[in-house]
Length: 104
Image 1 (cartoon, one colour):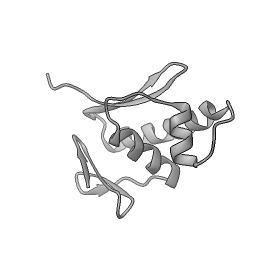
Image 2: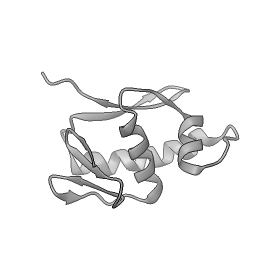
Image 3: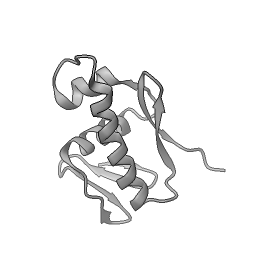
């Protein structure tokens, strides 16, 4: 299990929970979340995400595909966790980064 503030990810079951409530994700959304969360604090490029999640070499247009899935993923995560202690940060023209927000 990958335990993060506000989320629990179970790779063996391919499930994500918030306060014991499952968050319904598509296969690609789940794989993107798992990849970003496992590399939290590190920026992953569009190419890295595409190669790991789709298992293919990027052709140059993968940013739109990944962006579509990230948008849906964010919506589902933030709907389940409105005051989430984490964000999926966009790094313009580079990729994405899963970040845990510092407690105030």
